[in-house]
Length: 193
Image (cartoon, rainbow, N blue to C red; front, side, top):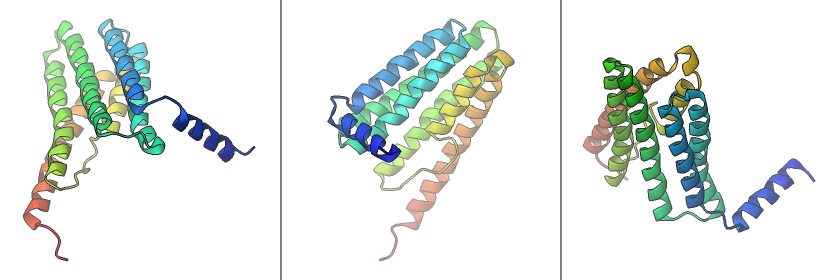
């Protein structure tokens, strides 16, 4: 049996199983909650590992829902909502950690990162509600997860603070890019047929 045949068998078994995209989303959410507790307890590396696995589940659920035909409007809503809670929650825990150290500057940057990260998602959702596709910018969810994960996993060598700065800047720049992109699209109007 070839590797593609085995892959097809696994795919078919998953599709026929009771596994749902929502179950994958909730598993990712649970792992991210564990990650938050670990980071709160200053276990950055293990928190990073749990965050990476939880975030991987969050990226997998959408692909699985499309592949299996088990997608639903509620599932898409749940996935997006849990993604925001996971990211915002992890950043809030990181802010609490820096606040406990008395590092007010980093707490302020993390707060900017929280708002900007949420706004990246909001600008896309609001633009799409207006009929404008809005995926511009480098500060998308996957990029933010990679930056945050790297910071957590490498905190022993002091990478979390620079990662937070990069995340805040990239997210803020992405929000500005999306604002200008949507403005340009809406002012230009619909294409002439």
